Length: 421
Image (cartoon, rainbow, N blue to C red; front, side, top):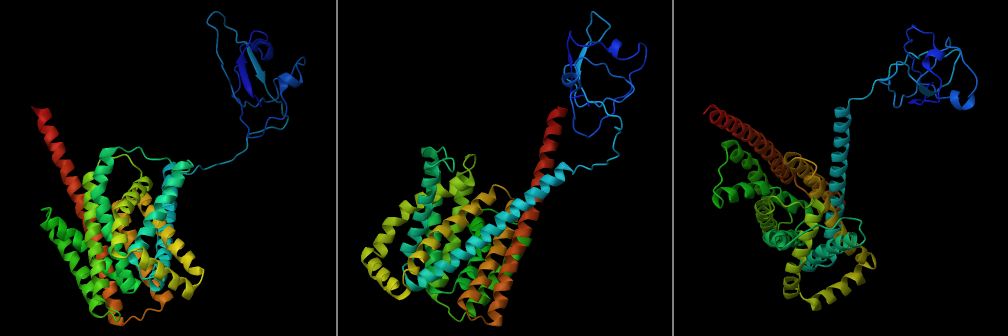
């Protein structure tokens, strides 16, 4: 097999290698490896052209303009029984391969997101049952995430974001809303079962539409409003039939929905054009929220109550209580970080569907682990609310696509009119 052919004045000529005025046969390519180098192994011997030479590569092959002869230096092997192998190799389509890899990546994101969220909710409820101080618990969650990211940036595990004063200025209202929503959800879970909190939190789309309609002046098609009926009805049915109903827990979940709606609104309005990854964005959000929350946590609960409650929890649970606190703090940051990272990879519709499935996994797992008593009518209300959330995401996606196409067509018409003038 010819491994290389280079232009060289010291090598043999093609007229000495093949008879003159004889067409050069088409070289046969073989997948067999190079066995020996003709030029290096037998520099002085001549070889017959009756046996095939198999070309591996040709480098710098050129014909001089001043002469009709071609001088080449070649390396090859000579095989008596060499022949092309009839092999039909089908290479996979590149687009299909990339699409399959993307789906696998999204699946990994979703599985990790759901698993981390389930683990967080379990440990968070265990901590709150033994240590009913939601303000401190919320603060520790933000502190753990902030510490993890600072260590990651310092050790170069993750690239630190490039931020300026304008970035932190636009992030501040987002952090305020995030802090309120986080504390309100934790207060809710300290008063009612985890499943009930997440059933009420599945009504967040209703708050989103109502706030956008009455405060921001946005209008929506009628199918969007109709999709809110099962959400509101399911949440109401679940609340009325909840065996462990608590008004503080119910209002905490409702306030969390409202706060997270404003967080999303502020985030969309303030972060347009900001080149910060999802992971770093949530890290900065956690740090700023920690600064906002810490003084309020001290004022509402205080170190004295924390010390008494901590000693009581350790005496009742033992050393495992410390592990519960660490686990709920770390897993809170990890599941939120993965959710923000997934936003960089998937569409909003896919994310909303994943969020709906996440709530189902959290509700079911918490009912099983904590043996939460559930009436059939209560389960029906939860199912209706979650189904309504799914329908809402579908309707929003459909009309968003239609509006985008309409805007594109209008732009084309405008361009056509301008070009016709």
